[in-house]
Length: 364
Ligand code: SF4
Ligand code: SF4
Image (cartoon, rainbow, N blue to C red; front, side, top):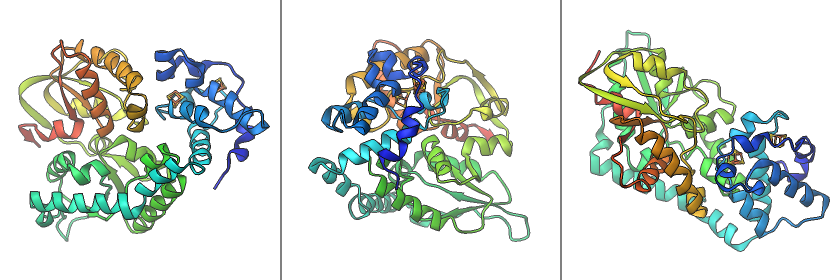
């Protein structure tokens, strides 16, 4: 595992050009240079030189980050910003009592077991233990899809059920389900790199099998699985764009789309919308702007999170769409938070894109 010292040359690559300020949602909201990568690098450089201590104040600024990666994508020095912040967070948290307590809660014995128990209870309640698996006819050439079920789907499988409904209209596919752990992204946010490596190892072991694609319905899971070094990861919308269907809606509906920060591209969007009959797309202003949620960030920096979400939600409301579509459960919470902050306005219904497609009157 790398230490902060191993990133010294990357930190020094920061030219202090300040370009990251123009894309950082937290900087735009607060105007605080310590919120953006440039300011964080100044502090971490001080830590490495021994001028500053990696203390509570620096940790507060490490937490003042949505891990959206916008600065990373924009940085002319090509610095892997999030990796550095995660490492610094790990080095700080492992020395604190509270941090070790949180990490203990995230262990497979507590977090993993709770998720398993909730998942089993949920399956029992929905009769899902006996759900029929989607299988291709033995004679047909099968497309083998390993379904990566994210944590939210384990507890509340609304999107999973919608995805399985859409997939049931495909012949010749086989869904392979495995007992994956969480993708690990939440552990990175709390600096728990050891736990992240543990779940990554477990998930990679399960993927040591024959498959065509790993399929996910969550942008954050997709991004994290790709960070494992996996190449054949597809989000469900990309899959539909690649293997088209027709989605017929009897009543005309207007939709808009919020791009989750972790979604690497939205090439699928135009293709999927073209497959929909009676669906009008209205692009919102700032489609790529962050919803401001990002799990822990919303808890630790709630005022800023709500302020970012409020602006996002206003842009969505202004479209007059019936539905705002997305591909990330965390964004769904962020959009709810944003709409709550705009409670005097009528807002569109929030749906995962797959959930929306599954409610088509006809899928051909
Ligand atoms: S864009 Fe990159 S190089 Fe420029 S200040 Fe930000 S982190 Fe440093
Ligand atoms: S990851 Fe996002 S929130 Fe964090 S410093 Fe970069 S742009 Fe700002």
